[in-house]
Image 1 (tube, rainbow, N blue to C red):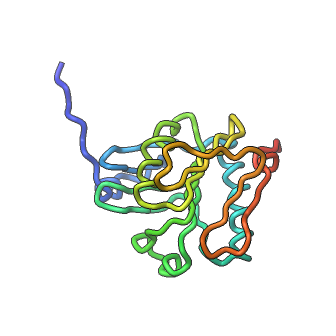
Image 2 (cartoon, helix red, strand yellow):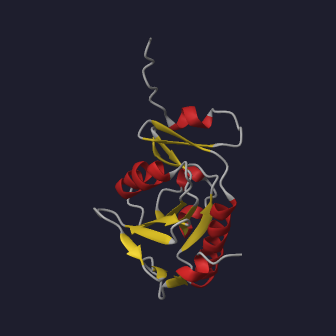
Length: 182
């Protein structure tokens, strides 16, 4: 049996892939492929988007976006966080290539994304100084909060809190609201 050497992927190679409904990302040459998200993923993501968006209407330190996106910190990194906040000046360019300083990145876990979100992408986010990284596990009702340089995450107990530099107040969201049934 002939073994095929794994391909080292680049951001440019990923950009050239066909639009087939899957999400393609590359982190340090590793291709990450995700199918369409589950309804629970979308519901939790929508709640986060509303909370962060409303917060940023008052604390104008950044602009919130959702995937699909094209965040790249090098030839072998291209990620699409489920939700992310970019500094206002970079967001104002309306060019993905200019959006390098993420104040917040958030991934809502899906069964197919657990390893990539908790390990592969977390390392990339930490190495590229993403201010705060939330790993949201809707099935377990938990949120891991990662910061650059952290060896272990903090765990949001009852309330998810975020206060980026320059903000006078903190965003607070009870986990009971985030994970409430329909």
